Every structure is written in structure tokens, then in C-alpha cells.
Length: 116
Image (tube, rainbow, N blue to C red):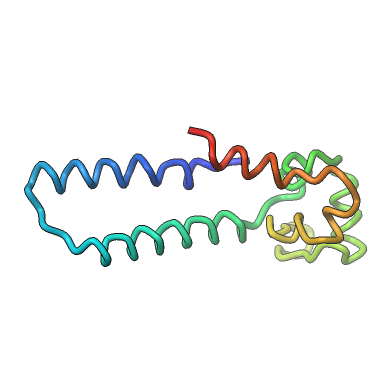
């Protein structure tokens, strides 16, 4: 699973802080923090709502391609793609019914998000 868009944010913000410091910029702290919070929220939402291929979904959940494909075919997982080109939303993989089947990888995802 590609968490690079989230992991890249701290580096981008640090580089921006270095530019501000170098240029002697005076910035509004509250406006800056709101922008940073908005950027983080948007990045998490894009990641969480990403549309994955069946293969990507299977890899992410640690399941077989067939098990994910079967769940799409039965409607247990919504197909957000097209006919013959199914895709599933990452968030749908972690709905209560999906997690209840076992192998709750949510903690693994959170650990990866927090890795330096």
C-alpha cells in the first residue's frame, strides 16, 4: 500500500518552514496551521477514498484475488469501477463487515502511517 503521499507531507512542510526562515517571512500562525491541517485532511481523504484494482485490494487486505472478486460479484463490496474493470474503494475494504471476517489490518496501516 502506498502511503508516500502522507509521508511526504512532513518533508514538504519542513522545506516550506526553511524557506520562511531563510526569507524572514512573517506568517500568521493560525492561518498556517489551518492550511497544514487542511492539507493533511485532504491527503488522508484521497488515500482513504482511493479506488483500487481487485489485485491491489487483495494485496492490501492480505486476501486472494478470487475472494475480493467474489465479494464484488456478490455486491458485498461495491464496484466503483466499470463493468469488466472493477475497482473497490479502500475505505470499503475496512468496513465493519470486512473487518469482522478476520485479519484486521487497521493497526498495521496506522503503524505504517506513523513510521518515520
